[in-house]
Every structure is written in structure tokens, then in C-alpha cells.
Image (cartoon, rainbow, N blue to C red; front, side, top):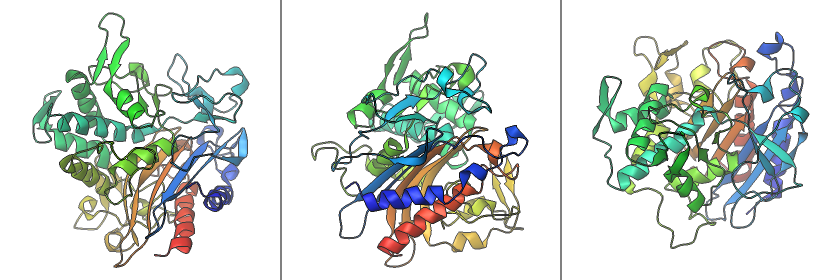
Length: 414
């Protein structure tokens, strides 16, 4: 059920981070000139109890936060006028530039139910969180017998298994792997565009998300050659994910979650057991603990603890314990982070200069642990707000992750 106490606790946790004091790299380190946009959703599964959930949203138009109205069936948000992010002809995310005047920008309605007159919320681009949608799209093709996790897939002269492309796309957020799998979606007809006009004629992911009651999840504008960013005519404004619908997609992936109350009992599982297992594996082996959790960044100066998740050991160098995630190196001896931490966090992050996101499944590690929840965050707090070039965002985001976990720990126990 929608839980007012949880919603208020989340709202206060956001306000306690003092986001307005965040230095902005595009303003020479001066603080923010407007409250950032944050969309934070949590669903908790207390042992032996009913699921509880809440979604709070903040922006320059709502600096004190707005609590989403969600019905007892955990369906779509009912009181927010969601609007799509925008880019200009040069591919710049103009809504978040210093001095941006939102009264002069045309924010189109987001896909999904319309709530004219409700509080407006411009949904930030989800950055690489979008790769969760690509992953689900590929898994569905495999479950339909149109592809296989073990088959070879060539991309620009490199041949690897589909499973390996998918792993790198999620665990180290590899953009090349993403493009390879976007090509696969087009090759197998999950997405079709008119060759002459470029107009999208069919998108099986959109049909799937609509059928699942997740209408704000959109992967629009991708190209047959694998393009999915601004330069390809996709990216900001065309690819959309709200925190609540991202969380509910994870609800359908989490094998320990209760049945989704917004879907009837006759609704088939989202994924086969094999595909679900592989999707979970890619999320569990996430290297980039740098948004809501921050174990990967423990060697950086001024490190702030986030959600207390364990770091997968596969990313650590045996000689000194530092981390290598794809082409990115992270300092410090992080070997203790593999054993420390009271949680396992199976998740996907996303960062660009202007955006930071994180969404995943949280489970307690200790014997008899009771914490089990889903969390999703989208925001416009990207790398330009990071205190170190190796960080993904302001330290205030992992601090928020820690605060949310503490709320749930106090309420439901370890």
C-alpha cells in the first residue's frame, strides 16, 4: 500500500541533504541556482507483511517535494503531470543549463495517463539506466526463441556471445555493448523503422511496457545501426523512465518479490527462469557502486558512505585491491568492501554530465536478514556536480542512499 509515513520519511531524507549547496561545475563551483530534479521511489517487502511503497519528486518547481498518489494496487502515479526532457538542435540538454528559463521551454507530455492540472514534473533523462530496458528487450526475444544467450553476435568486427555483450552493457555500462544489442533488437524486428522517413513503425518494448502497466518506460528513436544517443535522434526526450515505473519493472524481475498487485494472477511471468537468472546475474555483478551506493569510490578523497552494499570482488586487482571497471580505474585497496556491508544491491546505474540514476533490488546479507526492498532514483545531478573527476555525482546522492536504507533498517530491522 501507499505508505504516508514512508513518503514523509523519504521527503525529509531528501531535504536533509541540502542539495541547493551542491557546487555546479558549469557555474565554476558556485552552488546550484535552482533545486535539482529528483524522482525517488521505494517499495519494501516486510517479512510476513504487505508490501509498502512511496514515491517523492522534487524540482525547481517543487523544492519541498511532492508525494505521488499511488493506488492500493501499486498502479501508475495518479497525481503528477509528467513531462519529457528536452534537447536543442545541437543535442544539448537545455533544461539543465545555467540560466535555463523553463517558462520558455516546451516540455511535451510523457507517455502514459495524462493528469492535466496536476503538479508538473519534468522527468530527467535516465542515462544508462535505459540499458535495463534494452536488457529486458533482448531477454524477451530469447524467451521467444528468436535468439539465444549463447549465440555469437558480431559488432564492428568483434564477435562475442549475446550474454557477454549483455553483461558488459549492465555491469560496466559499456556503450558499445549497448549498441550491439540495439542492433539485435532491430535485426530481429522488435523495433522497426521506415527506411525512407525514419519513422518508427513498431516497437515491441513499448507494447510490452504498456501491457505491463509501465507506460512511462520508452526506448524511442534508436537506429538499426545501433544508435541510441542524442546524435542518433534518440537520447534525451525520446528515452524515458520514471522512478516508479523503473522500480515496478524490477519488481517483475525480483524472484523474491510478492506478486505484482497491479497485474492479474493470469498474467504470465515477464521472463523465463533462465533469462531471469541471467538478468539478475548482470545486476548483481554491477561494478559501478557510485550513486546510491559508493563502495567503488572508497579510495577517493572525501568519500561518503552510501547504501551499505558489498562490492563484487571480480572487479578488484589481486595485487593491490584497486578496481578496474572497463576502461575506468578506481584507487584504494577495496578488498574489504567485498566482505563488508550488510546488503546485496543488484542494480543498474546511469551517469552523464547532466544526469545520474540508480535502480535496483536490495537484500540483507546476514543470516535471518529481513531487509528486502526496491529503490529507484532519477535525477539531473550528473558528473558536473562531482567533487572528483573519478566520481559520478555529488556525494549527496550516496548520502541519500544511506539515509533511505537507515529509514528501512529502523522500520523493518536488519
